[in-house]
Length: 293
Ligand SMILES: C[S@@+](CC[C@H](N)C(=O)[O-])C[C@H]1O[C@@H](n2cnc3c(N)ncnc32)[C@H](O)[C@@H]1O
Image 1 (cartoon, rainbow, N blue to C red):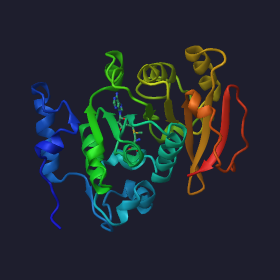
Image 2: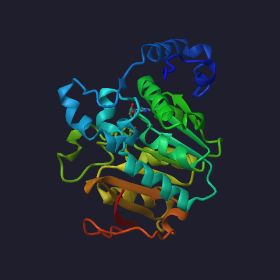
Image 3: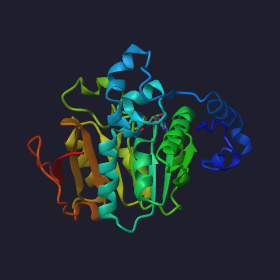
């Protein structure tokens, strides 16, 4: 079947504001990406870049449809897409805790690992990223999962959007964020410093901005994150009695990171999930689980 490679008017609608005059340059760059069918990964055609070969070998863990469909990946996305099992877990857990939720915002949406899974469970998903190439990949990947009609992508720098109060009036039910961890060296130190190593802003500023959009916030953070900082920031921003649920998430038996949940509906929810894996640390005010997605 012929692949649709042109960006048409209907598709352009899903790139919020890009039809505006001030985004002329970005619109034309986006058209070129579509026209060139850029960053396409065909099933079973080996990647030539040796540095990403090990990621390519387990590509089905990133996107299960990579085995049968064309997906779209920049070099950076090979290292940073949330594995599908974890993205699915996050979407399902949020849906269980917030059954009436309809609108989710995915800040730092990358190649759509999370956006696509959210779109399977929620009516409308906004994705924000400062890389036009990544937004393009998100849209293409959403097409492979037939959920492109539910996603709305906004190009730009999140700290700037946050400062300007973008998304605050849109009645977002839950905001998810998977910020850059600063490359593979995030594991170099025993304890990951959430104020100084997290990109492009530290935990306090990031969480503060996300809480202005919704009272339900989820962040995907390194597994060696300093939970003392999580506790401190939670208390500072939400009061001494506030809680944050921290879930250790695994993919294929490997610990991939932690998911931090802020919002009453998350910590009052008792899930029928398994609790295997590393010993749970009771870092007040956090509640920890280990879950294999
Ligand atoms: C870890 S990746 C997100 C991966 C995503 N959850 C997925 O599954 O594909 C982080 C993303 O943040 C984006 N980013 C980095 N700095 C940004 C900024 N200042 N504003 C918006 N997006 C930014 C990067 O382009 C990258 O796509």
